[in-house]
Image (cartoon, rainbow, N blue to C red; front, side):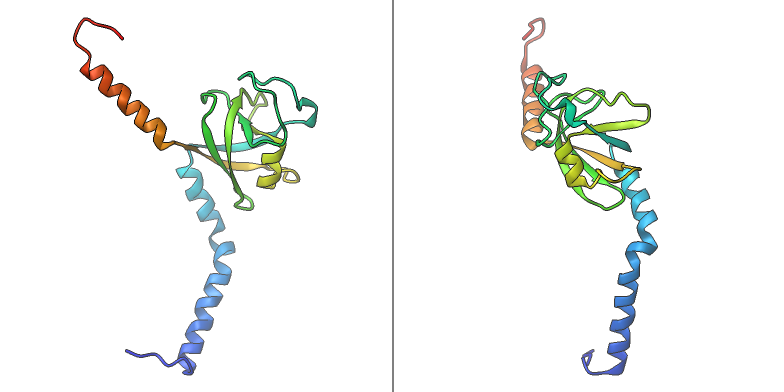
Length: 159
C-alpha cells in the first residue's frame, strides 16, 4: 500500500513516532538501566585512583599510569579486559585489570584517572557502573587447545 509523503495522516504519524522516540530515553531509562545491570557480570560503585599514586607499583608489578585505561578488581586475573559502562550517561570504555582493590566498602572496581575521565566519573558522586568481562577469542582457542592436549594424554602420564 503506497503512502504519500504529503498526506496529512503521514505527517501526523511521523510526528507521533518522533515524539515517542524523543521521550523514550527518559521514559524508559530506569527499565534500560535495570536490564543492563541484570546482564552485567558485576555492577555497583566505582572509584578512581588518586593522582598521588601515579608511578607507584600496582599488585601486578606494573607502575600505575594515570593516563592508561587500567583498573583494580579484588579477584579477576591480571590482564582481564573489562568493559565498564557509566549508568548515568551511558559512556563506556574497556579497561585492563592490573591491580587489586577496591578496598573501600561497597565499591566494585577502581579505575585509572584516564578511565574516570572517559567514563565521565570525575564529577559524578554516585558513580554507578555496570561491568562486562570481555573474553578474547584467542583465549578461548588456547583453552580449547589445552582441553584437547589433556584429552589426548595417555592414562598415567602427566604433562
